[in-house]
Amino acid sequence: MTTKLNPVEVVVIGSGVVGSIISMELAAAGHQVLCLERGRMATPQQDFVMPYVHDELKYDRHSDIFQNLSRETISFRNNLRETALPMRELGSFKPGEIVGGTALHWGCNARRFLPYDFEIRSNLEAKHGKTFFPGDCTSQDWGVSYEEFEPYYDQFEHIYGVGGKAGNLNGDIQPGGNPHEGPRSREYPNPPTRPTPQGQLFAKAATELGYTPFQGPAAAMTRDYMNLYKNFLGECARGGFCSSHACSQGAKANPLTAVMPSLIKQENFELRPLCNVIKINTDSTGKQATGVTYIDARGREVEQPAGTVILATYCFNNTRLLLLSGIGKPYDPIANTGVVGRNYSYQTGGRVEVFFDDKEFNPFIGGGMVNTSISDLDGDALDRSDLGFVGGAYVAVSSAGATPIKSKPVPHGTPRWGGEWKKAVAHNYRRAFSIGIHGSCQSYRGHYLDLDPTYRDSNGLPLLRMTFDWHQNEQKMLHFMNKKCVEIAKAMNPSSYSVREPYTKYTIVPYQSTHNMGGAAMGADPATSVVNKYLQSWDVPNVFVVGGSAFPQNGAVGPTETIGMLACWAADGLKEYLQKPAGQLMV
Image: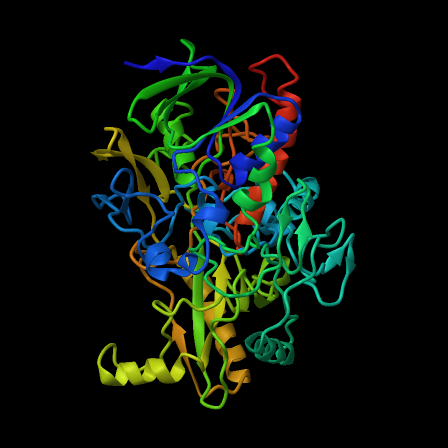
């Protein structure tokens, strides 16, 4: 039996980066907001205290704050000819399942997409012709320009206290920053991180080769900071254990530190944890949402009526909820029709390990995306006319603070186990670091998300099925980037170096990044997008779908800053929408 509750004005599904910001913006504007979160409640001052928060086994290996795969997972296959099988252990990516969502354990990589990223299709075809993209590539323009998005990037950076140095201030190139970034209206709210010894070695070598190194922006505080919502975030002590872990110091910007303290004070806001939304309900026409159905902490089915429904969950669940609710036409890769599940993409990456017999570093000092980077191999800075691939990468040396259980770099040729391996681990633990490649990933006709016809979750609902593999375009790009990184590595004069060659086949087993994108792409054409430029469903106008699911493809930089920007952008549109008669498409 379903329990039906009293209606609310707005229901927000998910309490992560998107859900928290949109809830805060709408509640502060006077709207009644209910936020439903499937994960448990968390209080940083009680749940993430020292020294327990540095338990690598608990967080990084045993997935304490990540999605519980025994209740819900995805199934995976590389192509349409294979049978998809359920993912039983988190590997390639780590979606969150807690108040604060996946951003609770992010690494604080806070970079803006380039202007190039938002109009990639039209720009590259204008430069190189219509045949430059692979024939099966479905990458497309976003329908909004960088110039339109820029104020919302700025807003997000002042909510999350991003530290960095502007490289392009209102069109004027600034020393010390990224000269290839899009114009920004003002400086970062906080100063950049300080270079580490590893970063200094990288910067010297990169400069000698003609690149322009800079300190990459980070959302772990470089000083004590009072943010846009009047929440205090303390300076990061750089003690490591940042990515895959929550922060014990309140220095990492995330929903629990940057938004929730102010949001829970709003009288017209309510947060309900342990509420797993399983469907968006619609009226008899299917053109108007009437609310949502969720399973509460006691396993009861509850119907929550609402005037407006906002999907603000992880990429996978945004797409799955649309498919389970029958909103939008599911994508069919064979017929190349439909939109829900289309344009799924991921993040490419690689690394070159450098080893020094005559130098030592402290791998525990770092965290919060302390890094020295170059962006000369991405966007319009890279001449692709003779390279034959779409996309690019930034290259960086990061000092994230080593997790000693999983971080055991050894030179190429070291035995994989035994006494010699142990000696190599002990010798090189303080004498090595990585030059990392963080690359873009295009969308392709055969890469998509849909509902699995066989496997179901603990509620009896179909799992989301992922069909994905590395494409020749991305492999070609990474081979090029590897060569560039080897040149930088050699310029550092290491004792030796090891190259991790790009994977020829995608696997969900080793961790790569939690940067799953697409499935509910935004755009200007309903035939190729699920939502319009305001993240509003073309099919059901009082449903908004905001997050990484809106990316038509993935850029080279981490997506969290752009996801946060989209939350600010969508919240601004929602304020306008909620003042109009219900059910109208915004134009």
